[in-house]
Image 1 (cartoon, rainbow, N blue to C red):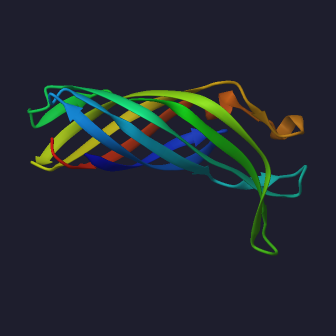
Image 2 (cartoon, rainbow, N blue to C red; image 1 turned 60 degrees about the vertical axis):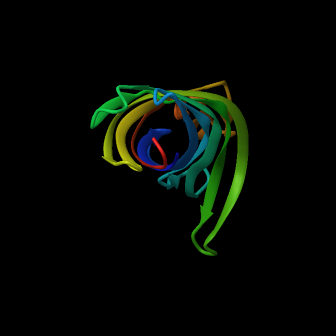
Length: 168
């Protein structure tokens, strides 16, 4: 199946929106194996030390493994887990010229286990509501103590809705 996801999270104590997708092969109706990715951006805020607005953006992707419990029931559980890599960028926003500048960027490895309540809508369409938790390797971006973003800033829950299309 193929799917797209929209989610909400807090990244660096600011609200963030996440968009993603997956391409999966389901073996024996009980386990999905595939790949996918997610992009994110948090809301911009004023940074007094830089005298401008700043925000974080980035993305990650990798291999998905998704055990599915009772897939033929109208409502059932699945447990997707992403193992992969990604990157994050610290962006300054120039309001006068409507221009964004990447100040610093860093790469990381990620593990993101989750749980979803999935609904069989039609034979080829499912909707799931769920949550995941991001674990990342260590990284640090920013030069001043008040603007440092590290791996703790990215760790946290994401709440999402996923729309799945394919043969189940």
